[in-house]
Length: 92
Length: 322
Image 1 (cartoon, rainbow over the protein chains, first blue to last red):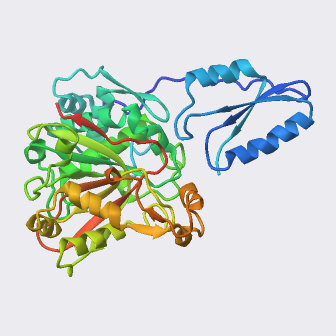
Image 2: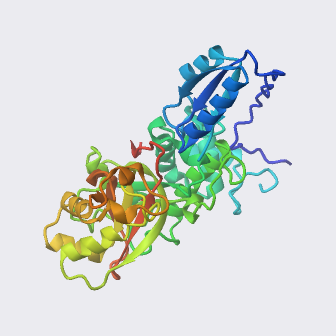
Image 3: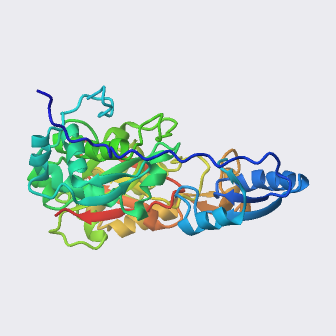
């Protein structure tokens, strides 16, 4: 007889979120650049911002409260409504 | 259990429904303590109890496990950051109050080591909750470069009877008669030998400077808590001289300083870079970043320091055992 176990896992299955479609070009797109506050992430975003603008994209910069916590829902909403592209600078 | 992935790598006790019910001791297994980062699996009491069974806990330990689970899931503790970081940090569980004796927690000889089921399995149950319900297994969402053995489980009790000082839970606002769990993001212990000091000032100097390379050699100051476990013979020297915890903490904070110019090599901090070369930089941002606990065997002059989990904004969290 199979034993009746209590799983330590949350067995609910979440549907995978599909990736948003990627644009063929950044020309005319608006990109949100997310600084998570890791060391030197801003340097990477500075460079990306320069390249994106040179390629004809508009940019905006946003910042997480701290790198080690998930972004606040308000910030996620701001990113979602603020542009068609997101660039996140992750780590040092 | 191995095939199911219900393990931390060691053999476990299968969490049958009967064992989990016994672990719950009449509590409502459907009660939720909230999501466990990083995978955000829901920590029902039944799942916490399943982790306690897997770890080898006796049912009498479960109130401590449940209190520790509530503590690590407090957003102020930032378990998310600790669970996924490349840092080695584990979750140190410190137990104070009458429950220590009631369930056989060791605060004496070998207080940071093996030999005592309550210490080993309570800490392991907390880590299984993080690793399984929370999904923070090494190589999956736990990205620790090295980790440390305390990530298998890390539960210690303060020896309130040997100590002349206020125990940790009283410092944190609880009554002495309350049983309390306090969780701290912590690195592995570094032993500090001192058999020669003859004054409390010399001993405090040795203890404090042992932490000078915590986190990284030139990373000064540290804002997150460093935990010093002071052995009974060292405690006795401070007791004999009438030193309070606060006096010792302040002395340790004051004595560990270096000129900024000596710290400008390799990894260092913006504070060091901004300071004049001869300006003295402390190892900690304040005396409150130094946590003092009394524990250990009655013979031998070995204390220890546990470095911090750094830069996560993780606060120390305490919960009463109910």
